[in-house]
Amino acid sequence: GAGVSQSPSNKVTEKGKDVELRCDPISGHTALYWYRQSLGQGLEFLIYFQGNSAPDKSGLPSDRFSAERTGGSVSTLTIQRTQQEDSAVYLCASSPVGTGGGGYTFGSGTRLTVV
Amino acid sequence: QKEVEQDPGPLSVPEGAIVSLNCTYSNSAFQYFMWYRQYSRKGPELLMYTYSSGNKEDGRFTAQVDKSSKYISLFIRDSQPSDSATYLCAIQYSGAGSYQLTFGKGTKLSVIP
Image (cartoon, rainbow over all chains, first blue to last red; front, side, top):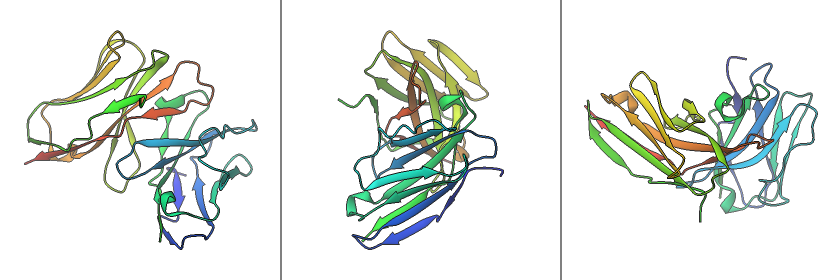
């Protein structure tokens, strides 16, 4: 596609429910990243996928968070038993292999509100 | 101590002014430096990318890195209302296998016509 596509753009959920956030990266980009942007905070790294390699999960804040990437393309970030502190904008980025931050393209994000 | 510090502002300037945005960092292993611009309800977009000390220019934008002081800056000349956005500095470790970035909190800029 022309850019990184994220869905839904907005999600309101009740505390304790599970949510799934989707990211469709740019075609041909082998690297995919999830970041979280909370109010008044910078972007916080969550997880990184590169090709068929084991993902770097070092940024996931708790075991309620998980992510998968199917077929080296679309990725889903799942948050189980959501808490109010999970409210944030979840941003996905993709890049060609080896370009790092200089080659990131971000999606517009999913704004998650836990009530 | 947060690894990247950035004054969140907000910063308000008249159209045509020179804008200076700054970040400091604490870890000398940081080697790659970026500035992103983020409009409201949009994802960040890359403005400038550099890995060496000194200045890098691109049109009205100049990125400056001083590794000895662990200080990075973004200058915007002849600022325009369309420059109104949040500006995020981002830094990457040398050799970081996952290319993850460490971001500042962002500075919100308003350019008043």
